[in-house]
Image (cartoon, rainbow, N blue to C red; front, side, top):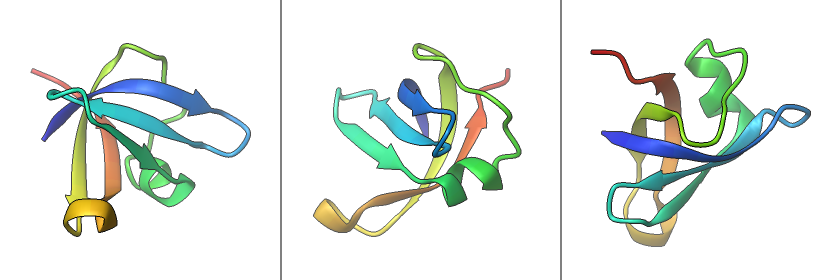
Length: 67
């Protein structure tokens, strides 16, 4: 699934993305670290994987979107 990086805190390595429908979805350091990223800037397109449904939905992986 694709999303747009919305916030990122380099100290905690966590932040949030905006899904294409505008829904914000937070991610934690585990999801960020799983993607092997070093830094993330607001506005970057990312690929995410999620688990759960509804209010239990969470990001499990954040990687850069590549063509």
